[in-house]
Amino acid sequence: MEILNWIILVAGFCLIPAGVLMLCRRYRFLGKIGPVLILYALGIIIGNIGLMPGQMPAVQEILSNAMVPLAIPLMLFGCTFKLSGARSQILAMVTGLISVTVAVTAGYLIFGNDIQEGAKVGGMLTGVYTGGTINLAALKTMLGVDEETYILINSYDILVSFLYLSFLLAIGIKLFRKFLPNETSGFSKKDADEIQAEIEKENENPYKGLFTRSGMSQAGKMLGLTILIVGISAGTALLLPESMFMTIFILMLTTLGIAFSFIRKVRETKYSYDIGMYFIYVFCIVVASMADLSKLDLVGGMGLLGYLLVVVFGSLLLQVISAKIFRIDSDMMVISSVTFINSPPFVPMMAAAMKNKDVLIPGLTIGVIGYAAGNYLGFLMSQLLALL
Image (cartoon, rainbow, N blue to C red; front, side, top):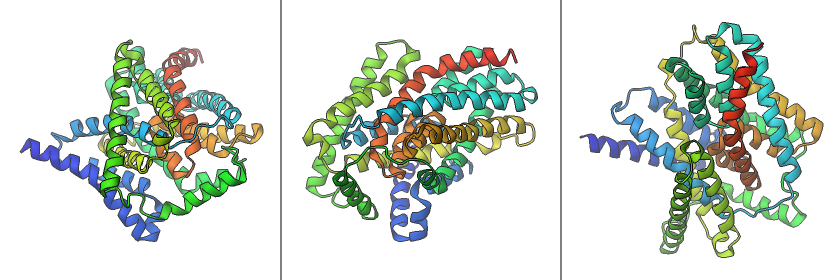
């Protein structure tokens, strides 16, 4: 019976995105909402109805850990690596880091006195919003934060991050493109025409032809290459201290994905990007299902919730202002913010939502730096905030 439950859960998480994609293509209003937001909503519902509680956590952990490493190389294979966005990339990264630290400080001054161990919480928020959940977990141990506070931060983080992503996907991307420069890739007229042609094909089924003999052959080769890359990356990361595993693992995945993208035969293979994107869709519904609404103490945790809202949306506002002052490309600013707030695994999803593959590599690069810096910045911020 337990094995059957595992099969049902895994099959459900893996097949629901296919149904959502089909409905989004069939019904225009769902297409405007987008598969990501729909999958997030479905994931939250699935995670909070008490479905198979014995097997659910294990399935969530396995799928959430497996999907992104498989997706990153597949999505990088079809990218053309360009250096034209280097200025915007560096400025977006620097202003993003500064924006998070300023927002954490401002939030502490507003809510710090109402939160138990507010300085330590500020340090944890600095770590998670410059790196990711791995930094949050590391800082919990490093700073000696109690389990209840850690769980509450995790739960609120998922809720606030969902609101943040919803804002970006609904109006943020379009708004910032009107308000800020939009020259991420420095495309020539020919490049722009080619990309516009690709965008116009988005309404077509990208998986059409995948299940033919030729399509299955190409997909099999790309999946085999991806598994090889994942194995090499994990093996290399395991040779180093455990604290460096995620940073080295993602760095290796990104580096090898980029390296193989220079091989024309790999770069021009069909379906690799779309298969990788499907893995990201699975990741979206699984991560959303991990949000435990029963853990949200909406009365006792209002100060903490307010702190997270200030950090997330305050840092976004500061990045927008910085982008306007320094003329940073709008898409690069958005991908930098998403990398810091949601961590690198969300970069491919946002790049797809923006229909801009060229921010994928810079976003992952910024994310790796964030992973590496998150623990140091988090610890430093906790010490500085304690002095205020």
